[in-house]
Structure formats: structure tokens, C-alpha cells
Length: 112
Length: 112
Image (cartoon, rainbow over all chains, first blue to last red; front, side, top):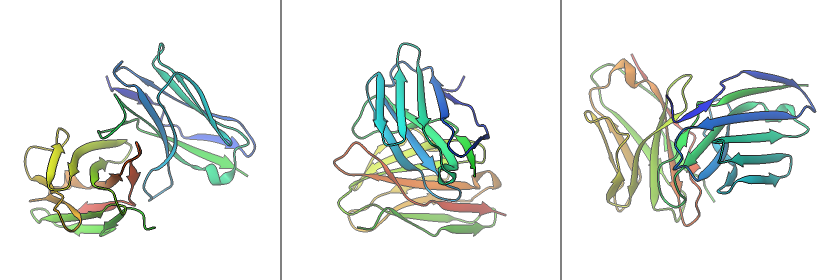
């Protein structure tokens, strides 16, 4: 069993839709959670970072963490064609300097 | 302020040759991580280095792979006697005082 499970998609939605991306994890030691966006042939770019259960909002993006269920989500409101990319969830046991464990990524396409 | 730089961006090697991948971290960052991304898979941690020290190499294959981050100059990931299974995108990330890893654009290695 992988430490982090993520539906690879692809997920195709119309412009303006609300997108929900999810990951589950099995390692209860994970305490820090991140979402990265990766455009084709580019490096990952950090979108959201949180270390507590609950919601964190940044513009059109909301990250949600439920540690009791070992489940994290990223919501994108008013999705735009420019949001078309692969979204990677990532996590680590603590902050600071250490390796990060990534999900396989969900490919999202927002259709104009 | 330049981001993380990697070169070359594309590298073609024949089986048995050596591959050298370079990573220049962001200015002021002294922590470097290397990750490998295979098709349809997420990023897998390989090694974490500080200047002149390997901190965590738990994800590095035991043979043929080595990494260094000298006092001066870029971090180098070296793959000796490459095989077709080494074909992948190799990303480095750098980290400064923040709890965030910033990724470079990657080096795409193709082994013929």
C-alpha cells in the first residue's frame, strides 16, 4: 500500500466549476500537508501549506485537512483554463528540513 | 531574484555512460533535495544535502548514484553506467529559512 494515494484523473471540468481534489494517506506521522501545481514539462510550484486540521483559504483555493480520517482536499473555486495542470498533494512528518512524500498527482483540465 | 536553476534541461545518454545533473539553489539557500519523477508516478525523494554534507540519502539507490553539494558551486547528482530504467525527470528543490521547498524546472534524462 502506498503511503499517499491520489486519484490520477484525468479530471475534466467546464470553466467556472468548483474542483475538488483529494488524497488519502496511511502514515499517521504526517503532520504537514502541501499542495503543489505542476504544469506540463515544468517543476512543481507550491500552492498551499498547512499543518493543522481544518480549512485554509487563499484566493480561489481552499485546503482542507482531516487528520482523523487521514484525508486532505484542495478546492478550486471559479476554475479557469489556466488552472489546467497536474496537482500533487504532499506531506511530511514535521516542518523544517526533511523529505516530502508526494501523491502521484491528479491531472486537471478546465475547458473554456 | 533567480529561482532554482537546473542544467542541462535535457540530457541524452547511451547505456553505460555517466550522467551529471547540476542544481544551483536559490540565493541564500543552503539545503538541497533531489527527487525523481517517473511517468505516471509522483515525485520520489532521493537525497537531502546541506553544504558539504549528505543529511538523508534514504531514497538513493545503493549503486551507481551519488550526490554532492560542495562549499562552492552547484549540487551535482551523478549517475554512473546509466540504464534505460534511469530515464526520468530529475528535480531538485532548495530551501532556506522558510518551511518551503522551491523546485527547479527539472532535467529530463533519456537513456538510449
